[in-house]
Image (cartoon, rainbow, N blue to C red; front, side, top):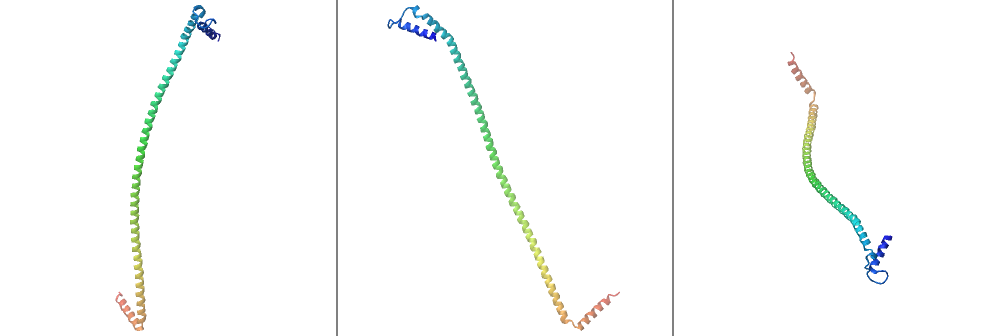
Length: 183
């Protein structure tokens, strides 16, 4: 701190003299110009190197930061390109899945139609078989009713015509028939 004050006193002495008023002191020994030039030279030589070193370090740091930023930008570009490629692949895959889904849906539709047609044909066959069975049952019932009615009429006729002469003639005819076959 004293050096700073001494330097200020010396500057004021150079510029203003010893209080005699305003003027320039031309006495080299009193103004201490030699000391000032030595101090300025030392400050410039040591301070200049430090300042140069500081500026060089700052320059290297800035260059390193720029290189790192360039590297990060390249990495970001590569990641962006990879992401775009993945997006394109995903879109292609999604399109394939949609197409496959459409094809599968169409195949399922055709399969359902064929299955329904087969079921309809089977049901038609069952219907025809059921109709034939019902017709056979109806014919069987009608036949049984006709036979029952015919038997009833025959019985009725037999009962109406069943007198003793008729029975005797039937019995005689059967006896004659069986006697022919006697061996």
